[in-house]
Image (cartoon, rainbow, N blue to C red; front, top):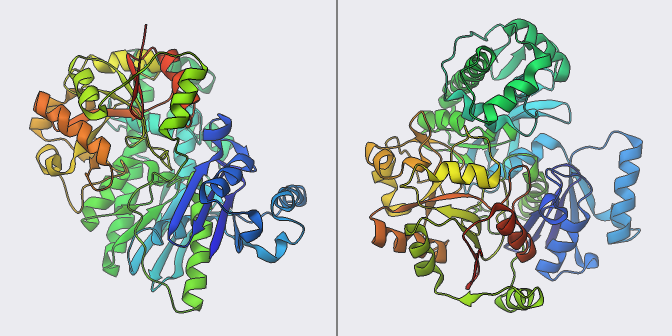
Length: 535
């Protein structure tokens, strides 16, 4: 059975299921337009090529989202007809937005029975759902409308503070750690049973304006304030107020998630979770502490909708024929990879000097020497996190490396960096570990005193960290890199940030990696076994 999943919209992408193999990529990585909105032409072409599948051999086309506007639907149909032929409608199934989110979480969790939670800004008229997944079936038990949106509340706070809503919510979460909550926001949005209730009764820019009035914050100066914060200017009156607002919004989000989690605890089931709000690693940690463990789908935002649509259709067909069984997504290296032959030809074509190296030892030596290293290997990661295949690496022992990286990548100075940790060292470095060590950077933890001492560059100002656990079975070369670094430094962790300039997509091809390597002025670039130096 060959199933294609398509998301035509915000953060477009395509996924192909071929028996037990999964191929996935989002359009932004290929056309280099961050969070690209539209039809995923390049993604579809790429997953078909990766799987070596002819469009005519595709059994089902699963489209995420319901298309209510005639113009958009006709445009989608025209695109599908070009690729799959005039009979494409016979193969096409539309999967509602939040059902696709729920499917991405449940059908990748490896769980036979699970509570399935989705929370985002909005999609197909809803902003959250709660379902029970049982024996491959999803049964919805609660929901919130697009008006009663927790995700939109946080997006409006993001816009209020001068950042881009639907993109920079992570900056608000990072900024919150620098302040204390001083505003009580129960009059704005609260939990009502298993649903949320928005007392503002408006969303989007109208909600942003009402919040500006509530906080007495001058919306017309928001860009000026965010610009100052990005540069580390935090002591101005408005900047201090912005930090207090961020801290209050984050605290309220965590409070509502905690209240919801405690009510869901009575069901006695583990939780699978997806949707844009699932990007908030601090709130995810709240749920983890309630349930002991938590499965967050690694491509939790709209980038994962194509996966969810395809996974839902696949599961229903398997249930129909009595063949469904739980599936666990073990890794997200589901994107394009490039052979050593292709990379060498590329380097020769552009006359770039290189040398062959033993990658783990070479990178470990480079990190100990204080170098910034771009690492490009294997299949590209699916989802928002670089997990060792499209990563920039540095020595976590040196706190000054944060300033170097912020300058090189043009990042906001208040945003933290994350570590990749050997799985056997996870319990030493994490104080509040419950459940399995997290391999996808989908939640925060409290760093141990030892880790704060030995790896200050990857611990946030509030003592938390967002780690990736690395195993030899799943990430062989990357595991060896960290192990070699530990032999030299005594620390079983390295700083790992995504291989991209701020505001750009993570690199996909060797050409992308070379371009970003030069622009960021990194010290070394590793393309599989080939090392390139900055001159």
